[in-house]
Image (cartoon, rainbow, N blue to C red; front, top):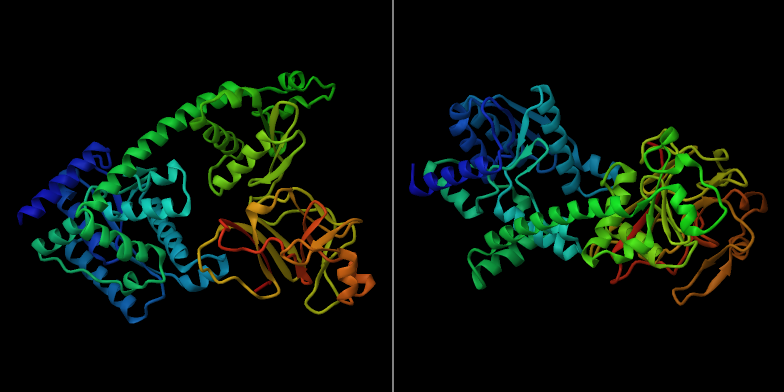
Length: 514
């Protein structure tokens, strides 16, 4: 065993001890792709197996993408596990089909599939830990990726050594150290051809940014970025703890809220957070006390309040916190709809967050007033006249007869190809200032027909399109106040087109079942 191998093994074991990643007798499921990092992880954990009395198992996910190359990787992993005496499970998934069905990239769908299969295997082993092979270079790439996309401190904290039952024993190691270890130990590994494809964002960061930085600026660039991410993660955790305490201090109950408003308006006592009949809830923050907070805590307190009421941080991002901040600093009566069926509004000196009642999952089918049916016009879905679904949450999904309507948020990627079909529309979400509503037409509705802001009454649009009068009252509208963003199947407005300044997009899609 070479000097570099001894160093990496010892370095990894110190990292494991520093972060408490392994305990004697642990069961560990290892994600092994067959690449250099995962082969190194498998070998090191096998080396430590007797010392820690570990029970090991391997999961390899075949993505159904690279043909014979992917088949080769699966065979290689099976053979390596056989030699090491480690049980191996090869799982085949159709990632292209899964990505298309979920409306996400193949890269993202593949990641989801891998963690699903690893979690399933961990449950079968009675709650095993999951070991994945991220290293310092991965952490540096993630840091840059999040920085370029506009992440806050939490995102810049990068990849952490341990989260839940997921552990990363190689996070202390640079890619060059891993490759030297494999060479010293005479270990083979597979090379994924997609790692060199420039159509993947992370590959462009790896080859066009990190590699030149190591060559032209500092050979330890990835290591230094990974260390910076680690320090940021510690700072972010401290700020999070301070924000939780600040959020608790500036929260007010319904009685205090009435006093702050100096209004005779009565509030239901069950509206105070913590009393949630049938899943409803509310949370009130004093805007006066919030404004006194240090600037570094203000956004984090809003995130804390929103996450607490939602019961999760998933799908809550910077744009939602910014909407809350705009409301807190805006005029009384301003409102916005947020994920998890939460509505935010400013009353007199109070930022109010309400979560509506529901028995459905956040992204599931929403029960709404009015019946949904398919219209007589070919390809044009209609709803019953008077249909209305106010304060639409995101993400959202509803059934319209043989159609399914979905609304979701996504971050806009430069040079992304904007859909041009009739039933998928992208809108610049940051320009939408009012709550989203799904409904049928009302008096005063208008649509912006040119990017310079030219408006047209919705009634005139329907007449110009020669839509039968009997169907106009049943056309489904996505609106923000009286502004029609999309007359579904007819026209989308022109004032919210995505452009080079767009950061977040509202994706509206209508598709047929099956």
